[in-house]
Length: 73
Image (tube, rainbow, N blue to C red; front, side):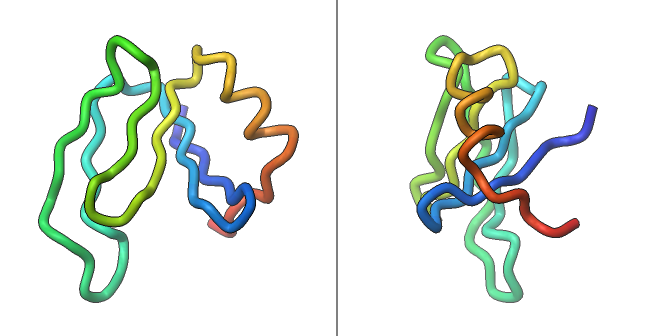
């Protein structure tokens, strides 16, 4: 299953099946690559860009899907 990206209150949230993720800022300039673990909490935030990652098994994932606006692919 591919990652799902949503915006909730203009904040980017990525729902993922992975317990470890890679963030590079996704932009033209981006930021240094950061490897982030979601264990044990099931959520984490990139220290550079503030992108939030939520594991698909975390209860917050359903709230994000319900309340969020899906990002264009």
